[in-house]
Length: 165
Image (tube, rainbow, N blue to C red):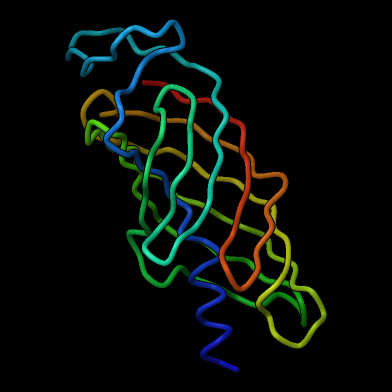
């Protein structure tokens, strides 16, 4: 039971984001290059989809494209706040297809289904962008997770936020 619970927690939040090897483009379809050191930072809205796997997570994020990700800290920190509720926090690395990274910190508020397994439930939360590499060096921002769901196979959510880079 404890092992299943630990596995569920690990699968719940590998909340980070990264990319695959497909070409990244801006909303107009132009090729995105690394940001020059003197470029002015801009703040942009984004949406993000997120799915966990046994090796981390993946999704699609505005201004990034398809990504992959991994938790920097394994396992993420988890504390029960009630019989069927808890808070999980972690540090994640999102990697874009070109290798640029976005570094994040996340907090999720988890509610387990009362089925005795602690493998199923829902979550909401937030994540903060605190830095990155390449065009995301010095990036900041935040996002809100509204509709997280998890089960024995993984976790899934969408989020919206802003990023400055």
